Image 1 (cartoon, protein in one colour):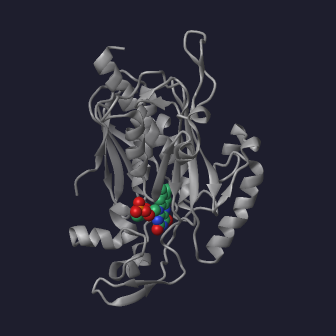
Image 2 (cartoon, helix red, strand yellow):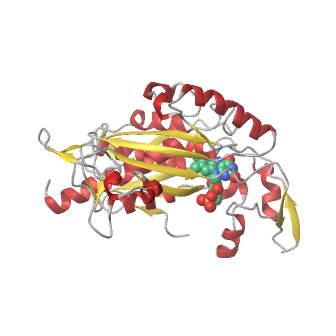
Image 3 (cartoon, helix red, strand yellow):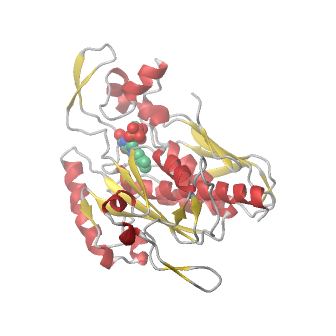
Length: 356
Ligand SMILES: Cc1cc2nc3c(=O)[nH]c(=O)nc-3n(C[C@H](O)[C@H](O)[C@H](O)COP(=O)(O)O)c2cc1C
């Protein structure tokens, strides 16, 4: 299987399957001399880890990361950084039905159509276990861009949106949904409990804001900052839509409504709005970079769904095993990681071309 790498100057490759002995990432192109130990990476993995609340999969994984190469005496050496996370809580027998029949909405049929042979245990390579490796690589990216703060949170779950007027940054880490609105988080408990008890699942929308990105990162055409972000975010499992700034809503505005007026500021322009989401002409403007990601409802559900077997005969599948009733919840740290990986790459690309 090819295409397991992402990035240009700051480039990472992930490896591993859901029920293999371990998974991980190799990060190449990281500048030398940066302070990096496991303690810089582990807190981000702990945010994505499964089994931390009743609202996520009950698979118990410590997701403890080990740095196998690329650092010496707590600093990066400029050589490939290899990161490894062991899988310790596999239950492959839960997936026997996935071996013989395809889960509609999951990758089972498409993998068989392409490769003709697949590791079905826990979804194999198509499992979002792989996103643990992205989160580890994303933590390395963050040490390359200390000037940037990246924050992702859920703004909608099961069709129920937060109240933007109730946005409280401190609330994001106080509830199991990465939700900035305490009242919405309380409502979401009932929504996710209801979906799980019904053997169903729900979708979500994750928003991510990056502050401190200087003006000038990105490129005008084929490595636009927004197209790189879109590619990175669309590569996350279950993502079905990406918006930059106002996104689709911009299509319903007039030119004057959508403008981000500028005034002279203190060393940099003062923008009066940010409909563009911090990117214009593919290049950062110095405003916060705002992206939104739509995640579909989990396709592995207990409710029986019509399907076909590997033999082509009609069948019905009710997926057992341990699954996230809303994959969007644990996607928030993954979104942050992918944004960090793109921004670190863009910073190094900008430096390579301009010397700044
Ligand atoms: C954090 C996270 C956790 C996920 N957990 C599950 C899960 O428990 N069960 C499941 O069927 N899909 C889960 N998914 C989604 C599948 O991995 C994904 O739907 C599948 O690989 C097919 O790819 P696609 O949805 O991008 O087409 C999860 C996705 C993310 C981002």
